[in-house]
Image (cartoon, rainbow, N blue to C red; front, side):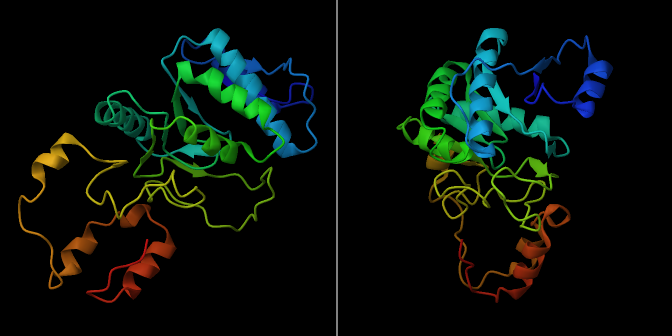
Amino acid sequence: MIFNCQPATPHPVFRKAQERWQGHPLLRFQDLHSTLTEKAASKVQQQTLDLVAIIQQLQERTPSRFILFVEDDFVLCRNGLLAIQYALQRTSTTHHGQWAALRTSYGFNGIIIRMEDLPSLALHLRQLYTQGPPDLLFAEWFRKQRPRPLVAFRHNLFYHVGLKSAISNDADRFIPRCYELLFDWLQHDELFRVEECAHEDIWPCKTEQEVLLQGVGRQLDATVDCDIAVKDSPMPWTSDRFRMCIKLIPRGVQAKV
């Protein structure tokens, strides 16, 4: 579902897309008419209340098992839907269905939760909408779902193309590229922890296969040659920051993460 959160003002891009794709079996365009009585004192608060109204409409009109939240100024990376399908399958298998949410990007974007958890999330956002931006409120929500974990996919699957931010972030701030490590602009307990799951693609990563393979094969030592290992880095997809840093790390020195 594609929501227009400003139905009272002209939105030519939304209308053009609506006219082009009207009647598509997988797409529905919806003007957001909120019935909430709360009043927003800022754009950030309004963004959170809009999310609450969207969740309410999703509960009424969507028969799906899972919900993926996508902001309109993020572009899905190449083969992103295949990666999301894979990440969702890995998450469900590894954690046996006992997980609170799956992160594939940052902000309130690339978040996947199950339909049965929507009421709890909506209530949390509505009660605390004055306390901070929605992505930070989301972090507070999933902490309340423990022991069910938030799962982080290793790679960022959306690229941010927007120049304006409701929370007044600088336009020239660092923007993670497609398939870069999911790390920047996230709380400590919702990013991919490469130091714990270096050879996995979801975090937390304690799998049955990992248990079976513990102690099997040779372990890396200080004399390992890094030339081949560095070739494994996704250079076409990574930032100039990564390319610069990887050249600066002396052999035998472990980079801090």
